[in-house]
Amino acid sequence: MKPKTKTILFILLSFVLGIVCGLFIDGKAVQQLLHQQGKRPANFQKMLTERLKLDEHQAVQLDSLLESRRNKMETRRKHMIAMRDTMQMEIRKILNPEQVKIFDELNQKMNMRGANKWERDTIEK
Image (cartoon, rainbow, N blue to C red):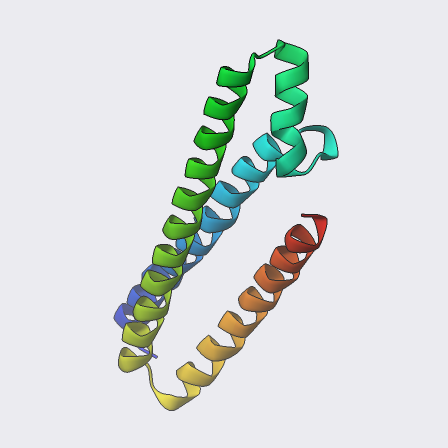
């Protein structure tokens, strides 16, 4: 493989890995916020309401805010996954068959790690 091809492949793979890591880090930060001290998102509002002694109006506003953020994060996650999939298809176009096989194996390993994490997080909810 030519050095120029290796460099381009390395840059593209780094970019894909950056997006994947960004998705996981972003999701992890939101989960930590919503799962304060191991609590589920539904209990997060209850905990804040009790500790901050929110009145009914504030509790409704908080619930609305949290739900809005959850929806935005889910939309963002779906958009990032679509971008990742498109980028992977574009990367495959520049690879030879042997490289495609290796690339697919790398993606499968990353997807398994992500799926396992996603399943754990979903089960906790």
